[in-house]
Image 1: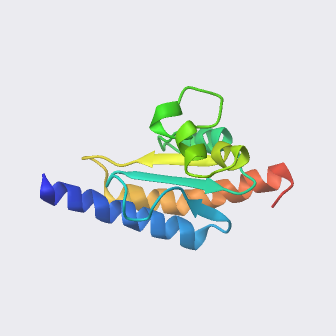
Image 2 (image 1 turned 60 degrees about the vertical axis):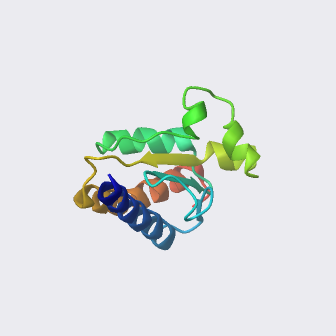
Length: 128
């Protein structure tokens, strides 16, 4: 279990580093290390979380908005607003959860397609 937790943590850290490095105006929600090993939560300026999730789904990637506590609600996540995010930031959030079956190649795939998804959505919004 400890070995698996470390594997997932390494994948999570790779995901976080790659998103923050390759997507302008991308921000990590929460502390970079003091978090669950299997969780990465971001917000993207000028991109709506629901639209990101739809685009990711079209690319075969399962994702959700907000926090686990609010995944079916339209209101901003109370968890994200409690950590200081404004409503707009919480609505632009994306939650990715890793698991036992998550592979390095899947993280690479997300890091390859997510920057283009965000770029596309920002262009559509006129805030690119």
